[in-house]
Image (cartoon, rainbow, N blue to C red):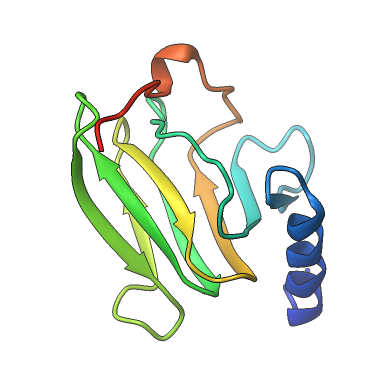
Length: 134
């Protein structure tokens, strides 16, 4: 499969129309594929809670646009912010297992490639920070 600008344009248009202001495109071979690989179009203002993945690291590659990954400690205190952009100083990162984080798009049309170890695991309440400190 080729990941073309046309595909990214279509996905970004769908994200703009979505109430969540984001749209995923599954890149797995089948529903039985044990990995998680997807394109994720994210628009500015898309609500994404601070969360963690206790069973998987997460690799994020910025294909277009700009975004920030924000990291937090267990108390919800911000610890680091990393900006990702194609051609920028940081284009991708790997988020360790259990690291609290969220992502915020800085530009319309932002699309990331997101990969995690193992099959999809729905987030449980203990994997979302309900009221982080700001």
